[in-house]
Amino acid sequence: MTRRPFRFGAVVRLAESGKEWAEKARRLEDAGFDVLLVPDHFIGPRFAPVAAMTAAAMATTTLRIGAMVFSNDYRHPVVLAKEAATMDVLSDGRLELGIGTGWLRKEYDATGIQFDEPKVRFARLKEALQVVKGCWGEGSFTFKGEHYQIEDLVQEPKPVQKPGPKILLGGGGPGMLRLAARQADIVNLAQRVLPDGTAPDPADGGLDNFLKKIDIIREAAGERFDQIELGTSIQKVGNARKKAAWSEVDLSRSDETPQVLLGDGKQMVERLRAWREQTGLSYFVLHNETDLEDFLPVVAELAGT
Image (cartoon, rainbow, N blue to C red):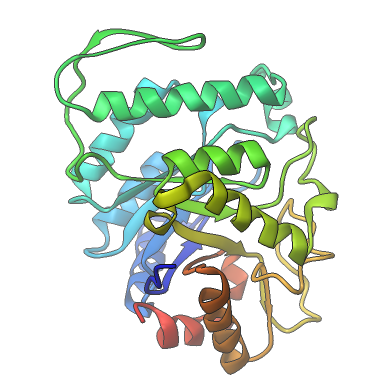
């Protein structure tokens, strides 16, 4: 098992102005965070991801940018490939492309986007990955799928990173994890979502289920396993009595997983080191800005080591 250096990302949703957004991005960069991540949701106070990611890149020099994660159903993959390539060029190669099926039913209902059953959304995502990578390649691209048809498309600009930005897939269902094992550069381990899109599945919480996800990836990836960067989102840190900020995730059974990281700075550092040693997890995403102050000493101690 390859021992990767620790990397840290942080999800940032909103600011009162462009100046404040830039200051947030620079603060993460100065604190040792590697990536600023923006959600892709219509509901709730949050920026749209492409503009926000680009603005963060323009305000920084080394901070990478990404989405946690782009919902495939919200834009055609040719559009996403074009936006991603443009962001990669404008950021001098600092984009990481996180993508998922899209899952939150109430957003589909609110916007009138058709909410298909899981197997259809999953099949569409598998095709979308091929389309995005094809658009980034040299020459013309043609694709004949069930959901997307592309004919002799030459898309420019091409990404700075070759053959393209790293792909992050997030999820907890076996099918998504196996797809990630075959296609992703980075995997964010999450709770499986209920088929009706109402919430993450509470039956998928707990330590045993978390560890099984890593086993599924290892088995499906085979020799490719050491090329994959494993990570997860930290939903709550610090004081056990502190209420977690907004999240759809059910944390009631997660205290033994890295998604709930309790204790003082030293205890959190020790837990993350143990997780990397035992499972190979090395990329941790802070889900809530409200936890930033508690988490800064952890990043200062571990980032890049």
